[in-house]
Amino acid sequence: MAVQPFLGKLEEVPLPHVIRQLYLEKSSGILDLHRDKDQRRIFIIDGEVRSARSNRMEQKIGQYAIRIGAITQPQLMHALSSKPDGTPVGKHLVELGFIEQGVLDEHLKGLVREILFDCFGWPNGEFKFFKGKPQLPPEVEIHVSTANIIYHGFKMSATAAMAVKMLGDPAGVLIPNPNLRLLFQHITLDPAGGYVLTRVNGTLSCEQVLSQLPGDRSENVILLGALLACGLITLKGKNDVAPPTDFFPQLVQLRGQPVPPAAPQPAGADAAAPGRPVRPGGPPPGRPPGARPGPPGARRRRPTKKIRLGTHTDFPRPQDMKLSKDDIALMRRNISKKYQNLGSFNHYQMFDLPFRATQKEVHFAFMNMAAFFHPDLALRDEFKDLKAQLEAVFGALEVAYRTLVDHEKRLKYNRKLGYL
Image 1 (cartoon, rainbow, N blue to C red):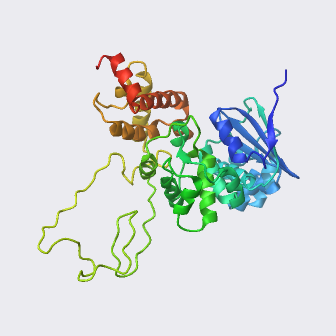
Image 2: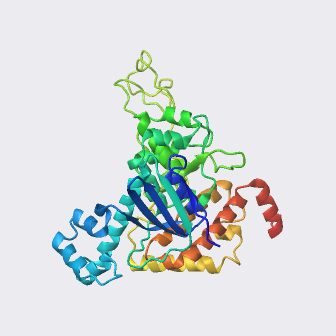
Image 3: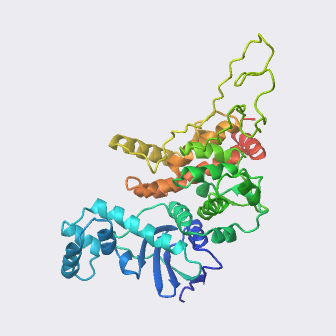
């Protein structure tokens, strides 16, 4: 019996929602998009975008390579005229020596992003998804972060009206996504997106978050919509259990995204702590500008520097790191070792933590490990053969984390281990 396609209208189900749902279900198939004379075909394997095609001439790999200056028009014409039937144009360009394979791979990724970014701006259209693993030649299959495509594509192409429709009820509470696989996706956030992310603490409504953000409201709505579209945040439901309220500020710092500094204060005003209003009119009478409060002659206490676990602003993101051969070999050994020990490690050993580790230590141990064992690491060529191991390890880390940060579950688990 033929498999029924998953279909609908883009004005009712936005494209980012469609792609995110396919990512969550780890679906494989072909997603066809139609709007008037425009046609797009997205190839998806295990929930990840692997290739894309367009019926527009300028969105063919040959024309794209000419546009960015990688090849010339005569070189493309020669490749097209001499190409054997069934051979991809890009592969033949490499065989002729007009372009290197590594350069072609990067251009293929750029072309797929361009095709998808273009579709994110469609206000209407139709989609059909046909299940079944697509047969793609290795030369045209790419490995990119689907979440990255959704975030940056939505931010660049979507309108404020589309974002408002996606966010839904302004009174709806925004929370960090309880799905930790989505929460720790490999996404490169810009500073503005990182700052918006820190405002989502699981208690504020969409309207309240927007009211706290500086700058243009329409741009902030689009940023919030992009974060929702890629799955970093979601609307609170009845059965959702959000991570701790400080989860996102720490996560953003782990990713190396700076929080924008506070707006400059008028001359003569006191420097206030974050979140505290500045006293209007400058310092109280009799106190020189910049002087600290306190009785004359009082000894000034040296401020204590607070150290937080896992909040290094220069923490490297795995997908952005430049790794040497030794680094790659070490990471591969660590992944294989963790995978081989899944059956023998208890939850504490998964994080290299002692039995008496605090909830906060568990919290940050998971944050540090999740980025380096996330299945998205398999998007790098050096680790793509370890995807199954990464999936298994990340799943075990998630189970261990959810057990150890829940008081009741942890007590039961400790009794099971004989610690109580």
